[in-house]
Structure formats: structure tokens, C-alpha cells
Image 1: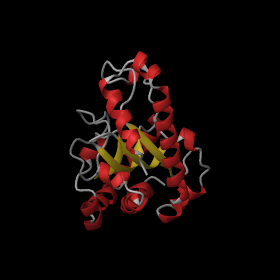
Image 2 (image 1 turned 135 degrees about the horizontal axis):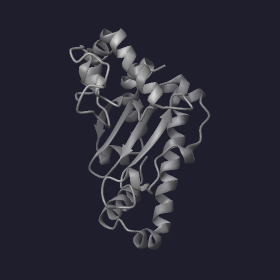
Image 3 (image 1 turned 90 degrees about the horizontal axis):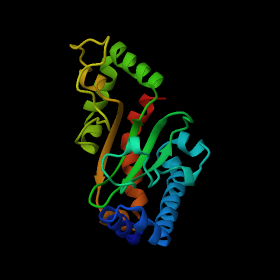
Image 4 (image 1 turned 90 degrees about the vertical axis):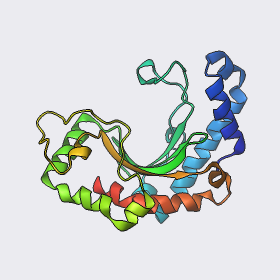
Length: 217
């Protein structure tokens, strides 16, 4: 599924995160981009096995993964480029990142699903729902099969230090209210992703994550 050269390129990029190096290694970059495009196509081709909405959505493989270049506001360090890539399989929402993803990063690969980087409007609706029906998300996270597949439980890419204004600090969904998006993920080894049958491992994870995706439908 993932070519070994892709991991090599990402590792080398992490050690040489400069424009001059990227320019000198455009051929290797383009090979990695083709690999990501192929992975996005494969996820869509197998989507009927984990979510019919993904299968029904129009597939745009070249627009289904994060780009290397980072805008200044998005950088977490001095590097110009991302050294990790997320390949997405959107669950049919053209305006929000709701669906499944494969995170590719040497030494830290995982597959997961959920809602990441929601718009302000969607985030507000999510928080209202957490207050109106707190038991739904709690039951989802505490489900035995879900807990087995995702030992870390429900996570987020960005968490607030305090409860948003206007929400009850004693709410049973307090931890979720602090989350900017809700996700789940399961770690996958590089060896597993290098295997020709890696897609079946990813499908298994995506199936287990489907209840969280359906929460946002």
C-alpha cells in the first residue's frame, strides 16, 4: 500500500526541511505524491466495505490528502513542509472533514475517523448536541467493541484548556466540550502498511470507527 520509498522520503524531509532540499528532490516528492493519490483511490474503491456514503461520494484522489507546504499560520515549527500526511476518505459532506483517514508519518502511523477541524457552525451544533443528549457519545465511547479497537478512546487534534463560554462546567460531557472535533484512531506499524494486503487492516479499523462517523451524519 505504502511504498518504502515514501517512508524514506518523509524521513529525509524531516531532517532537511528546507526549500532548497525539496527542490533538489522533486522527483522523489512526485513519487510520494503519486503514492498518496493511489492510496486515496484505493480507499474509495474499497469504501463499500466500511461506509456506503464514502463509496457514493465523488472521488478526487489528488485533493484527498494534506499537502507538504504549510502556510505560516499552520506551522508548528520552523519547517516549511509537513513531514506527515493524512489521506482522507470523506463520508459525503462537501463542507466538513467528516470521515476516515490514514495518517502517514515514520514511526507514528495510524488510521482513524471522525470530525476534524470543524467550522464554527458545525462545532456549535456539536456542542449543543453534547449538552442535549450527553449519553449518546458516552455510550459510544464506552461500547466494548469500540474500546477494544480504540484504547485511547475519543480524541481530538486540538483541545481547549477551559470549557467554552455558555456551557455547564459540571456537564457529563465536559471533556468532549473542550475538544475541537471528535476523532478515534488506532496505531498501525510501518511493516503493516508496507504489506500488499494493508488495505484489509485499514478496512477493519474503519469499520470499527464507523459509529463515530455516523454520529455526525
